[in-house]
Image 1 (cartoon, rainbow, N blue to C red):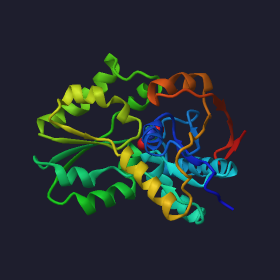
Image 2: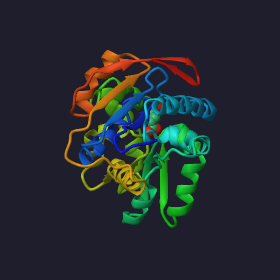
Image 3: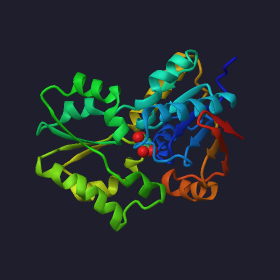
Amino acid sequence: MTSQNHPIGVFDSGVGGLSVLRAMRAQMPEEDVIYFGDQGHVPYGPRPMQQIQHFSEGITRFLLAQNAKLIVVACNTASAAALKHLREKFPEVPFVGMEPAVKPAAEHTRTGVVGVLATPATFQGALYASVVERFAHGVQVLQHTCPGLVGQVEQGDLDGPRTRAILEEVLLPMMEQHIDTVVMGCTHYPFVIPLIQQIVGTDVRVIDPAPAVARQVRRLLEAGGLKRSEGGAGSMRFYTSGDAGAVQSLLPVLLGESSQVQAVHWKSDLEIER
Ligand code: DGL
């Protein structure tokens, strides 16, 4: 039986989900968390949907085997490719996923032009199409992928010349079209918001959906009677299918906290071995 004291499972193709975990820690420091970064397969963005679905299912099983009481798909790409499938496959598990924050962008734009940055798979998915169809009436949505940016964040390069060049190539043409809002449609991207803000200026609003997603996690836990009582300090456990040392050294930079990271291996596209 699922208990309030069980951990929350969080996963991403890599370190991107730490931008969501950061918001969760700020709002619910008492919760235990297990984080899985699939560095062995990052980036997910250019991969076929079906393969991302398999990885997401394998990671979900891995997190459930460790008693996760709720799973946060802290990856727009995995949400686009697999969230519906995961909800069908594991109907008893509460899931929280990501969708590009087109709604708040459309509500607040004054120029009527907003930019969305995300991966190719996110833009191809039905989730993105439905968000634009539902919320972007009368608003021009400029969408763009940022090839190479996920890799830069995985290397901890948040403001070097290559990272800046990738962002300028995407953002300067959007500025010419008078965007006043940019949506972070990939959980890796909030880590470069300071650099984005340097490029677009402070008049352009940059939307990081993480705080809203953390609030949704909290609401769902409360509704299900799964919220841990406040006061204590929750523990964190980190797993990666890639290089544990590399992830470990990024945690203080990206999350502001340190922890051990354990390496695990994929046995097949659907199964992780501990
Ligand atoms: N962090 C991811 C996202 O939110 C995935 C990036 C990738 O692996 O391509 O879309």
